[in-house]
Length: 163
Length: 188
Length: 165
Image 1 (cartoon, helix red, strand yellow):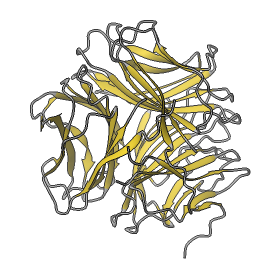
Image 2 (image 1 turned 135 degrees about the horizontal axis):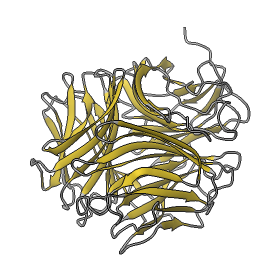
Image 3 (image 1 turned 90 degrees about the vertical axis):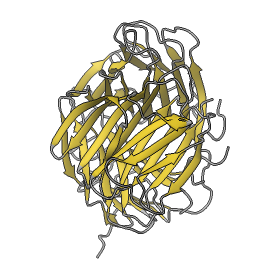
């Protein structure tokens, strides 16, 4: 049975960082999947943005829950992560899926992410977004957007097979 | 002019790629009724886990899922839901609680014969002893006029590595024949 | 224990010209689940829709689905019952990603359940849904269409198979 999902690279933070970049991404896969387990140093739970080839995501449609409501909005924040107000030692569980990343189309992606908290309030959401670059994806950056990721935040980039 | 990023460059990627990162660990497919499914002695050799679930119960109208880790029966769990029931959005949050659960999660007696729920649960960094364990779960079923779809988060507030996962109907009834849970490991 | 490669590409195709629909056929029954990734657009603001079947797609009212969506500033939930051409997600001339997870697609003892997620910036909508094809036949044919318009050239369909131990 040919091929499979392949880990391209990973990063575990030993200290805080404002962003993580995966560069020189091989062009030999069909889709990319970035898995994040992150926590933010500040007090906001919505603090991430994505850049592809250095271009910031210009827009995404988000649906999110708070534990007591479900809302919809448009923004460019690709990151729901635990803040410093959430339960200690608890990190988000998120992924960004970039389909057909070597194409000559603008780069669209699917995002889903969850925080968790020992309380009835916690953020969870999905988003559909697009980054206006028609070049094949060679780098992906996830930024904490005015904040920093804490130590022990982890980031894994996988390639999904190409036939 | 591009901003200067004061962050981490994770890789200048070249060679030594870890292939076969997604592997099947174990699968339970029921040939009859069962009060639950447990994966024990989960290998420590992966970074993340994924459970792919296909479930039906025998309780009239369906049941909720009861998910626990490492046989912990204490109030050490939380969960939050973003869902829809076909008419209204269905948010929910609870903590602390005795397990992670999927509210009105899977079909049972009284729903269309042969109808099963689909669910995909991702557990990231399940071996990381610096982190409580956070899961996300995309799930649902449709009964042609009933059913729900949910995106759920959950937490086991314990930094221990996960070596055991149990999934059972909440109200103590059974999963029925053809129900299946497959556990996969993802390397990192 | 681990079985080796369990996540495989079955087929992938990019439309060379706009088309009313695209069909994936002769899908092997040897996997446990399928994942279909649609990356593309349509010629106007319409919808992606999908039929499945065994040999040929079912065009009868044998589909139902439960949806959660976000559109503009509204989050809501809806349903399709007795549908003949079930909904995947919104589409437009802007490229979008839609991911469909078929669970136990080849099991001839059960009805067929799938989960979809995805959204489109041009239509300003994101959708999550759970659907059922009320048939116990194995799925070996999937047809994607644009509801009321063509799927754009350059749209890619990639089908992956997941194999359980």
